[in-house]
Length: 143
Image (tube, rainbow, N blue to C red):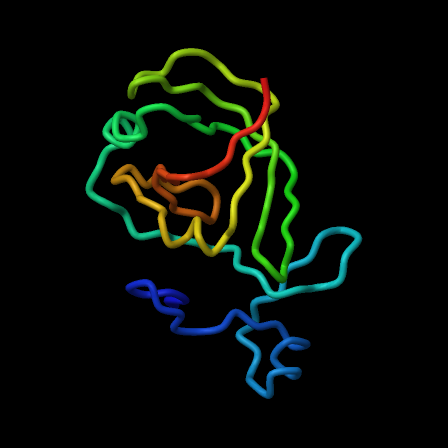
């Protein structure tokens, strides 16, 4: 089922508890960790591909971080502000320059989703089909 189409929310992702609070029907979308109660979530995700290759996205980035690994997360559910640990490769003038380990990326989830540029290289990984993504304007901190 499509949750978002052409940038618009088409359907909620609800577990029994949140559906009851909203007076809606559950979509059967509960997830949980080993020590946490169920919450709404999605496990099978497929993002729409764009027109550019990963190489073209890196070139268009100019200077920035090519992220290959994410660690942990923190999000303010009220404002959408988030931060995560990351590692990958530093890009200068559209070229991969050197490896980067243990930096922090931060931004606002809503603003990030409005600016995201998908690549054309989606491939299946477990239950997800996601292309490379260029996210302009993300804050990066670290040495």
